[in-house]
Image (cartoon, rainbow, N blue to C red; front, side, top):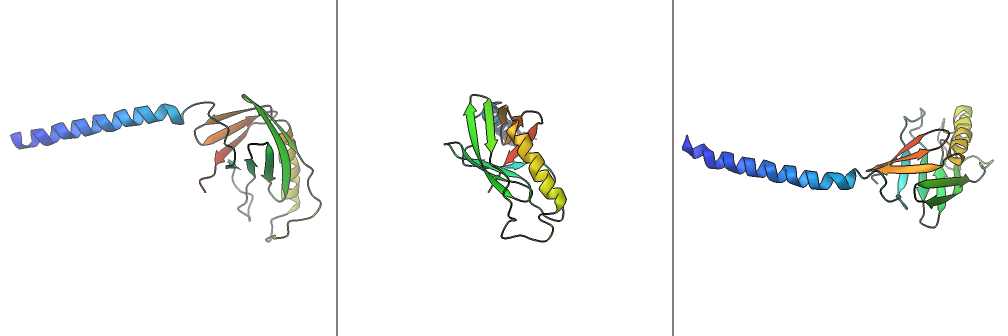
Length: 149
C-alpha cells in the first residue's frame, strides 16, 4: 500500500496548482466594467426570428463609428462613450431592401423589429461588460455576447 502514497501526493499538488491558477484567472474575466469591446462584433443575446438565423449585431470602432446589423437591414450609427455612459445615435433605416436577401429575411415582422431595435438603441444610457457579455441599459436592457469569430 505504500506504493500509492507518492502518486496520491502528486495528485493533491496537481489539484492545488490547478485551483490556484483558476483563482488567479477568474478575477480578470469577472471584472464588471472591463474595457469596451471596440472592433468586436456583439451579437444580441436572443433567439433568431425563424426562418432566418440572423440576429442583430453591433460593431463599434474606436472613433465611435458603428454598424448595426438589424433583423433585416443594416444602418450606420455614432457611439459616444464616457466611462460607463454610452449614447448611440443610429442613422435612419434605409428604404431599400438588402441586396443579398434570402426568403423570409425581410418579413413585415422583421422590418417592425428593426424599427423597435433602433428605438431601443437610441435610448441607451449606460453599459457594463462582464467577461464576454456586454449589457446596454436604457428604457430596455439589451444583452449582447461577443462574437467568437
